[in-house]
Amino acid sequence: MKSTLRKPIYLSPPHMSGEEQNYIEEAFRTNWIAPVGPHLQAFEQEMELLTGAAYAVAVTSGTAAIHLALAVLGIKQGDRVFCSTFTFVASANPILYQGAEPVFIDSEPTSWNMSPTALKRALSTAYKKKKLPKAVIVVHLYGQTSRMEEIMKICNKYKVPVIEDAAESLGSSYKGKASGTIGDIGIYSFNGNKIITTSGGGMLVTNKKDLADKAKFLATQAKEEAEHYQHKEKGYNYRMSNVLAGIGRAQLRVLNERVEEKRKIYQRYAQSLPFYFMPEYSNSRSSRWLTACLLPSDSDPVEIIESMRSHQIEVRRVWKPLHMQPLFQNTEFYQHTKGLSVAETFFRHGICLPSGTNMTKEEQLYVMNLLRENTRTTISQEAVIF
Ligand SMILES: *Cc1c(COP(=O)(O)O)cnc(C)c1O
Image (cartoon, protein in one colour):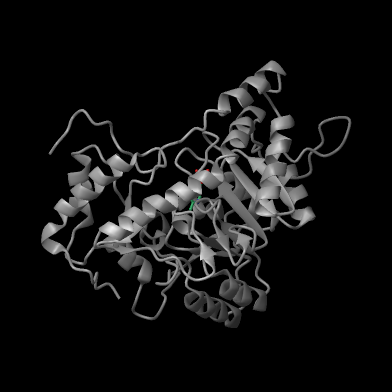
């Protein structure tokens, strides 16, 4: 049944709480439009409370937060930075901004995120060659936190700082801690498709005062304290505006609700479709920002995506691993086990399903029925992937 009356169903559109206008109005009434202001400070404090991180710095995007993280850790021209391969390009672009060299690390099957096995091999190889990285960027995809205990143990052994790209995992937790607060620095994104949004924005969190101060300093043009304009270092214009921080504050109030709703959406899909769904491993709680799954090996993700598109439903492939991108041709890459790239397997079979919290139950049922119809001939509980 093809209905042209239905409105399109997107992957993860913005979902406003209704309170945002009041916060924006307050910023206008008090003329705190820019540069900083009370909403900005309050938003940072509220993020500190929510995550348990000692310091939060609000910036213009998640990408800017990653860039600042690398800058405050002193990553410069010629340095090496390890990064998850299975992620959005924004995780690694800032490595290039710094003139540094990325090295990509594969995923593993339990978390779908960075493989501790591959990381261990990469670090011990680098150590032997005296080419240890200056940082490791660990990405928590689709709400799922990586295996941080193992990853921190390995990185601590070599004294390599860890940046958590938690752009997709705000509201998730790992062993009782907020996702993004386990490494040296964590970053979040408030881009339009994320679990909460400021229309565009990001946040850097850390427990280290010197790193937070430095990040704020670099984000405001590295302006020294002086009567005149005084600069010793290269800075950036990365601070979030007070108006957008107001939107963020209103959104923060519904974060828990959004997580609950996302988890329900995941449950409904997982209970009724014969795909292999991204697991949630012990001691972790995923926000299920996007429901991701692997199709049976004889189903073609592209066919399903195109067919769903004809019904105005947005289904997407999972991230294409960065080591497969032309931008990162000839970049070093460490597989989970020699001869098996887990991330490449995910890419071949993986899709993300509509996960918007403003999608109604009826709409989700409609999506599920269409997906079932599209895979009718290939239904098999065993997705035969591993
Ligand atoms: C969205 C996203 C980013 C970038 O965040 P922006 O706010 O869009 O700059 C970085 N990493 C991952 C994994 C993301 O999903």
